[in-house]
Image 1 (cartoon, rainbow, N blue to C red):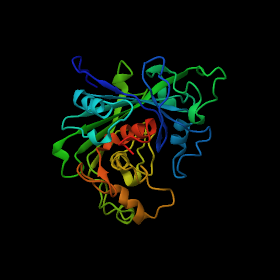
Image 2: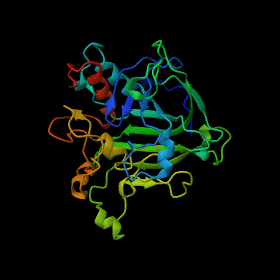
Image 3: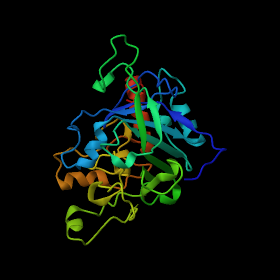
Length: 312
C-alpha cells in the first residue's frame, strides 16, 4: 500500500449496530469520533445460514468500522450536516473523484482467526453504554472496558465516471494476512479484489453449469487467507454478508429508504437477482430519489439522528 502524506481525510461518525441500522452513540474516547459497530452474538446466529464457519469465527468478536473520505467526499458530508439538527439527504451527491476508505477492526482472537497474528491493533471504546446489546452496559453509564481490536479489512470506494456504464463506482477490498510478506501490518494487507458492476446476467443456473462467471469483478487468484464467498463469486470482504456483494449492498441507498441492503434469507433466486442490477448514480433502487452507494450509512445515520430530517 502506498502512503500519501499530503492527502486530507475527513471522518464519518456513525455506528453500525446491524446490517440495517445505524444509531448515534457516544464518541470513541480513543479517536474522538463515533465508530461503526456490528453487533453479533457469541454463536453468530444473526449471520445467514450459508455463512461459512470461518466467517462465523470472525463475527464472534465485534467489528468496529472507521470511515474516512477525501476532500470532495468530506465536503458533501459537511453539506448534509450543515444544520446538525436537520441533516439534508438531498445534498448527498458525491462528485467524480470522491474516495472513501473504511478500516474494519475485529475483536476476534488469534485462536479463532490464526492469520491475525502480528496485526495492527487498536483499543476501541466501541460500546460505551451498552447500546444495541453489543455488550453489558456499565451501571455507571460511563463506559464498558475497552476492546483490543485487530485490523482485518480495508474497503475502498471511488466515484469514477469511467465506470458509468455499470454503476459509476469502483469498490475494492483488502484483507490482513499475517503470513504474507511485508515488514509492517499495512504491507501485509492483501488485495481481495475489485468490483465495478454487479454482473446482472450471472444467474445461479449459468453459474452452476459453468457457462458463466463474474465479469465485473476481479478476484485475487493468489488469495490464501480468505476465500471470498459473495453470491456466485462476486466481490466481498471477510466480514461481509455472503448473501450480497459490495456494490449490490450499497446500491440500495435512496430516500425514502425502502429495500434492505441484502436480499431476505428466504428470497427465491429470481427475487434475489433484483439486488444484482447495475443501478446507476442517477437511478433509484426502488421508487424514490436515488442516492450514491456510499451514502447508504450516511443517510441511515441522518435518519437515526433526526427521524424528521429530509433523510426520512
